[in-house]
Image (tube, rainbow, N blue to C red):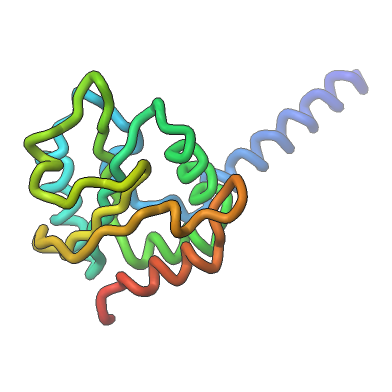
Length: 160
């Protein structure tokens, strides 16, 4: 009986911990993967609608599942509550795949060529180009620098 109660207690604690992580403010993604089959044009339309209603900009993150730094970026934003909150206040995020399977040339051809991956393309809520940022400038060691990421998000936040 004690073993059953102990197992139930552990299960409840694990569920509560997972729930607390899930309830943390998630970044606003229109899509959460670098899907080669996704339509970046359709994703951008949805992002623009969300950005317009929330007075934010659209952040296009160009990369792919092959990109080590893209995975590091995802984990960093998911794990750093302060950075995530600043990104939520500033952006609706759209991931756009760039890979051998699909370079999304037609869509990405309207923007400057990335210097590396992941690459940030910043758009106003109406879809007009606002800027581009090489994410290598936001790195620190084998991760990203929280202060640089927060400053980046704040720099691009539309006036409230």
